[in-house]
Length: 348
Length: 217
Image (cartoon, rainbow over all chains, first blue to last red; front, side):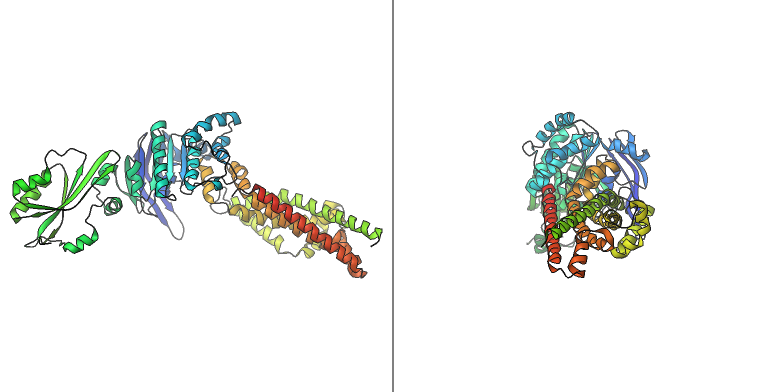
């Protein structure tokens, strides 16, 4: 649905900034694609390249088969009607009522009043604003304003919806309801959604795939479940760590006096990651039984990323060094993630 | 106060109103679009154009830096061409308007600049053309402040029109100078001042009312 090919964006001037460096992304029809990054990473520029609010310095942007970089202003305006956009600060017209804000994009297209009414009343129902038609934005809460923003973006029947930090100005409860709404319209209207955020929670909640951006470069990209269970880059690990503790809590780490090297008398701490429900062999029991080791569990938990369960366990193997090494070998061969994260003395 | 003086005051009020209304209307017709152009041709705006922006900007600045009393005298030849004479109420409208246009343009420019750029971006994302953005976003969103601007302008024009009276434009200012000052008729002076105060109060109240009515922010 959206093909970004070798996109780069340079802001010239005395402080030359390379906001995007050779980014290629392919976003499939009907998916919810998330781009996560810290502020200044280039995610805002990236999403604006999709509807050409920012013209990329080089590269091509193909949305629904049309290369937007090759269009003149007039044709571009025409194509933008297929791409809805919602914003962090909603960007509603303060001088217009809820109804007139939603009618605005259709008015721009020169649609008649009757047609507009027929088109937008059902949309206002989807976003549950049917009773707010005559209110002005200043009379609405943040969540309601974003619902108006969503309704406005949906009014022209777009194929793609771009969400620019759409929930960053909202409280957690409202964020949840807006994300549910986005998920809902994604399913009902088969709408392709691209969202940018700095909150991993948002990605975890609704995205199918995610790209991690930093310094104008995509560091990592893949299915959300994969990125969560096996983050490769440091930044990704930080984002994932913010909502799923891959690590022992800092205090426990200090208290245990964890060492980086396997010196004599120390025993390995291992992190196990389980994805899905399929683990044929009881892992911990297997380690105890096969290698005659004592296993103590330090930390563990289960998270759900959309419908996939994702568990992790941090254990210490205590026994003979040879047996410990064999056990690590054995764990590595199992279809689960395992990683030695440090070494401790066991009389903790 | 004699009937004659009362008639004189009524006539003066009429002339003041005539000067104010004509120059307000003409300066709105020219000044508001000029203010819009100053914004949209600015850096990073919807119709960025450095040459137009710089040229209009300096014309506006030049006109605004001439004190009104000097502007009035300096453009007498132009006034003659436009109004057919350099004396009288109609003639006074020319310098008043020429002073009012750049003043209003700057005020309107500031009001439009205050609009959150995100709103403009949203309109662009919906495929709005520059004209549509001006008509459906910039002007309606800035309307409450533009009404405030026009109120300030009208009050200023009343005060300037008194100066225009000094060169034969008529109006309340003229009466205050000729009767109140030169003939030492304190009651006439007082009467013109009271009328002006009431007039300005009325205009300010109307402006405030209208501005509040359209303000949904």
